[in-house]
Length: 151
Image (cartoon, rainbow, N blue to C red; front, side):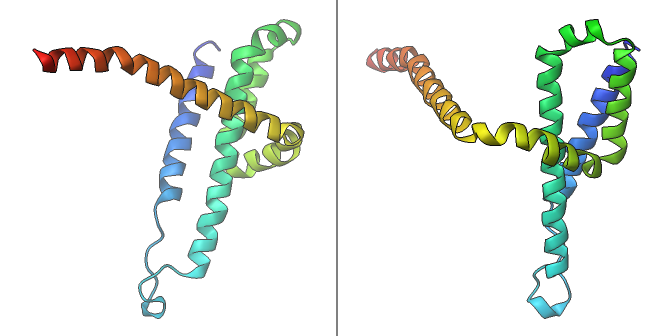
């Protein structure tokens, strides 16, 4: 079991990346009717595929955050935890977007929806702090370049 779960993680990651690559490719041009543009049906299908792909990535990221912070405590109290986790990963791998969309729509979105404005403000603050730290980290480089140019 210790080797099986990381292999499932790698399979899930590879399939997510590959599905994202296929989904982001622009549909081929339709016949001569649309001046070389894709058909409305192809664009609608692409939009549906993008929603499913995004749902898979959101569920995957939430699962990774849960594993990082909550799994150590929860696994102590649930017998056969690794086996259940393997079954959940297999479910996500085999069903792809059809399995991830209901998880996103009925579990993750209702949990996060009341906190959307708070999370947006917090992430904006983190972005400004990161920009400030980056600007401070470039200051010694700028001073060094100015000193180099004076020599």
